[in-house]
Image (cartoon, rainbow, N blue to C red):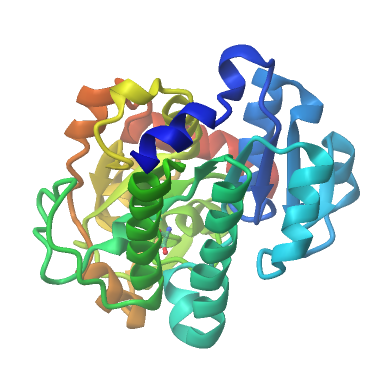
Length: 330
Ligand code: AKB
């Protein structure tokens, strides 16, 4: 009953009122700037507000609206939503898996308290809320090959625990209050904007090191298989999911992926462009994290319900990355 009441009053900005006003938190991370560019192409420059707690470069600030937003400051967020008439929040602020283990109290604040703030805000102002989840929300008790949409989730990192918390809280707010909560579990995302603090980051660093020096020391074993996708697929999946009609969504949290590969397989593909590439392996604590994560991610529910299709396979990903990273390191 409550669900229906809230649904009927919730705004649906893409349907009738012109482009949605979209706030991206944590927008100076790996995905934020590219997501903003994507959405600005679709909805117009002023429809997307990038935000973070750090100062943007002049170039970023000149691309479109950029504001200070601290996700731990509820009142500050309220002010932004009201002043800028925000319709959607894309909540990217988070500490990733490896860096979260280095500073658990900070990860709890950013990843858990931050989600409490944005979720409550989204409920109060009837916003559509996207929170990314991850392959890291699974753990050693989960089936790893393949990992279905609904299965055991007992992650062993604070990052994973915080993401399971976000998934469950979002589902709860959806069922209890009609919140339009949407969440995709992403695999490792490969982009020429370097990530920071993750376990899957090696796959980006390999391109930089290969093209700069022809050598790479990998912190995972050569046979560590993990699900991955190129950033172009990641951003498109997010947008397609955010605009998918509600009646297509049989759930609020979906696995999405494009491929799975090991460091050895990635190096093999990269040798087509850098034949002399030498990769050595020195596993560190990130190996334990990777060993508890899915190897192959089953995203068949996303494919069936709202038509998810990846476009970039391993050879296309390597070709694109070689071009983009190559242009940066030369
Ligand atoms: C990480 O490695 O922590 C992230 C992720 C897979 O969520 N890239």
